[in-house]
Structures are given as C-alpha cells and as structure tokens.
Image (cartoon, rainbow, N blue to C red; front, side, top):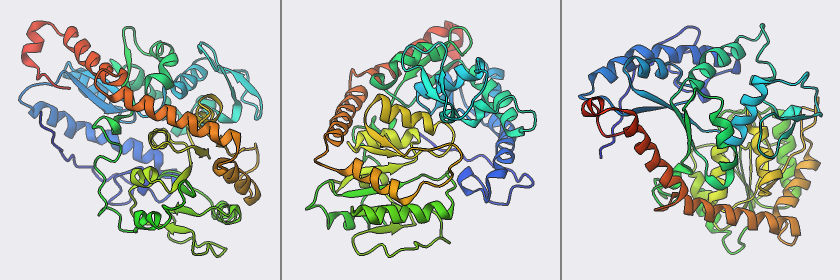
Length: 420
C-alpha cells in the first residue's frame, strides 16, 4: 500500500487575508464563516483530482467540515464516509437536541435528551451554540453550519468515529438513526495508536523548546508536573490568562504551559520550577513523560483521547463547541477527571478556583484522585486492546472494508481500486 499527499490550491477569497489555510491562523473569529465558504472553492480542483486517478476508490473518507466532498463523491458514484473527530456521545446529543429542541435553553437548567440510551440529561450551557442558536435567522454561521455542513454530514454513506467501544458503543445505534437509511458508524480509534505506540511519529529532535529535557530534570518526582494546553482554536482573554497563571503558581505544583499568545506576558513571577512555552512542542511525548501527573485542557476530543492513552487524568476546562459535553463525558461518566465549574454570566474563572481544581487533580493522597488514575489506566488498556490485532477498533476497520465491497456489484468493483 502506498500513501501520497496531493496539494490542492486554496484560492484567495475576500476578505480572507492572503496565506490563511487553516482556522487557527484566522486573525479573528468573525472570519470563520468566510473560511468555511472559501473551502467550497476546493470542489473544482478536487473533482479534477478524483477524475485523474487511474481507477476510482471504493470510498472517499473526508472530514466533517469538508461538505463539498459529498457531492463530488456522489457525482463519481463513490461512497462518501464522513470522518467525525467528535465522540458519539457528543454527536448524538447535538443531533438529538437539534432535531427535537426543548422549549428553552435557559442557563443552569437540566435538559433531558430524547432517544439517548443512557446518560440522557445535560445542563443547558453544555449544549453548543450550533444547536441552541440553529434557528436564529440573524446568525449566518449557524444557518450555514446546519444547511450546508450538517446536511452533507447526514447524507453520507457512513461515519468513522475516532473513539472506541468502551467509551461510545452505547451511542452508536442512536447516532446511525440521524443518517440516511442503511448508514453505519464505525468506532475505529484511537487512530494515533493504530501503529502501536502513541509516540509514533514524534521524535526527540522535534522539541525545539527543550520540554522533554526540562521534564527529565523532574523525573525524580513522578507525576508532579501539571501540563497545560488549550489547543489552537480557543480564544482566551488576557484577563483569564492572568487568573490562570496566578492559580497555577498558587497551587504550588510545577507546571508546563503552552501559551499561543505572543503579546501576553504573565503578571506574576512564575519562578524557576515552572515553564511557559510558545513554540512547537511534542504533546504526546510530554503527556507520556513520567514527570507529568495531570493535564489541564479544553477537552477537545483528540486531547481527551491522548490524555487517556498516556494515563493522565484531566482538569476539563471546555471553551467552545462540543467541548462542554466532552467534559461531562470525562468527569461525570468516565470519572477520569475533574471540571472547572463554568457559571452562566461569569466569563472569567478566578485564580482561587484554578488553584483548588489543580489540587483536586494532583493530590496523590486524595481518594478521588486515586480513582481517577485507576480509571485512566483502565481506559488506556482498553484503547491498546481496541487497536490491537482482533481488537474492536481494528475489527471495525476490517468490517468497513468488507461492507464497502459488499455494496458494489462485480462490474463496479472491477473498475475500483481495492482501497479506501
């Protein structure tokens, strides 16, 4: 099997600045809709690429946000399989509440989610804006999200989910009901562990900030360091950054914190035992390091999976989209972490709460903290088992290929490459 990369020209699209090729590079959140619309311009180049192949593939696997790929695949008589980086738990809640919304999403109220097999109640403020504001005629991004991206999603032939059986199997059947008749969902994660080691692809020389050497100096105190990272998409105010750094320092636990704001400087002396980095960092290697004892993060699903794979409990601090639902999954269902208590109308979490939650996460003698570590250790073993030979995720991928072959008659299969 060969793997290759093909570059498609991302045309300029006013008012997007030149050179913007991913959402994390956007200068302001208001350009997000413009970027989503601009991605549709890739339809022509992608159609030409597909037509240039010597034979058609059995299927096209494309990201949830690449809405144009479904129509390109349909025109070529190729199945489109949507890759969804969300958990099935969060996906089902979002789709169920979008299809059957409650009378209101009044903050701090509990909402019963229809058609959920288990864990059917969530707080109103945990529901993403894409669901609560989907019917708002004055919100063009939400309309675009539902009418364009959402419609292409549910018309896909199937769904690949970067999750695993023990976390999401209970919600698969419910998720499939929101797609066209016959659509399937396959749990195939954690995909980054499919090659065997969560550190596969990361090398020590890919650590220009010297994070691993810094952690090596603290290896004599296993589990003592708090690792902090909020990904690339969240926009955090300077006021919140100030409260966070004060809370981390006050906790007394050494920390390694990834900050993506070049113009912000800490308002307190972080001291010699703490480190703030701003450049490239090998996250999986950091998480796997024995000096790290806990992970403060925004609860993006990829971060959740990486934390579980590294046996690191989490302080869940959700920011946007379905991250609040992921935090519920982590802290309330899986018992693999604690949560920052977000309150309606309160935009900044104070340093005293940060300090308290970091202590709750890192206290080695606390019964609850010990239980969290037992749960993440269990989740790691489940993840290893899932992607190993004969495991549930490995078998799901084989079943996907088998199902694809069965959908084509001999004439079509003869024209198609035996690949996905």
